[in-house]
Length: 262
Image 1: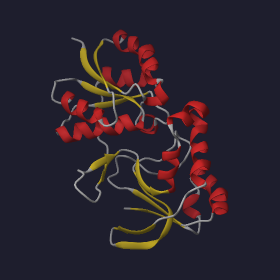
Image 2: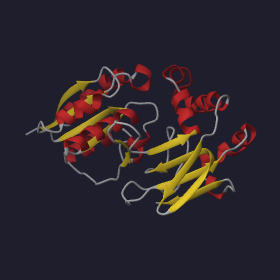
Image 3: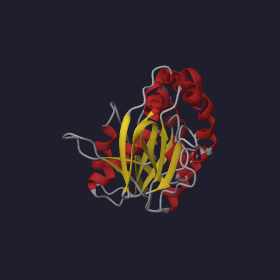
C-alpha cells in the first residue's frame, strides 16, 4: 500500500521559483510509490494552518516544500496539533538551512526518508514576545540585532538578482548602512548581560544564511540546549572587518563576543 504524504507547498519560496521546482520533482515521489496530496499556500502564515489540519488527517508524513520559513511554519502547525506525524523538508527555498542540516539536502534524500519511514527527534526554540501574540517556534535560530536587519534587507528582489549564495552578502551591505545597535538585557542560566549589542542569537543549528554563516559552531539540534552568541556594538568599519569571522565560525574568539551554551 502506498504511503500517503501531504506536501505543504509555498510557491513564493525562492523568489517565486518554488512551484516550477516542485513540478520538476513531483514525479520522483510517484516513482517511489508515494501518494502525495499538495496543499498550496497563498499568504504568509498559512502553512501553519495547513500543517495543523494535515496532522489530524492520517498521513504517513508531512513535507514542507519551500525554504526555512515554510519549514518553520509547518513545524509550528504540527506542534500546535500535538502531532507525532513525521516531518520532512523539500529544499525549494533560497537558504534551505534547516533542510540541509536535517538531512534533506536533495529531493532524493527527502524521498528516501519518506519511503523508509525513518525519523529522529529534534529540538525546537520557543519564542515568546510581549503582548497577546502566542508563542512561535524557530528551528534554526532566534536573533535580535544586525542579523534581523540583514534578513529584512535580503528581499525577494535581492534574491532574484543575486542568487542563493550572494543575496545574503547584498543584504549585509544594505543593512550596514542603517543599522543601529539596540540596548538589550540578556539572561541565560542565571547569568545576565546588559549592553548595546550588534548581534544576539540563540541557535539550534550550526549554519545559517544558506550555509554561508557558521553562526553557532558545534550546535546540534538534538542535544537539548542552545548556543548563545552575544557581540557588543561595533562601528561600521569593525563590522566589515569582523563579519568574515561569522562566516568561518571563528567569532567566539573575538574580544567583543561571548559564546556559551544554555
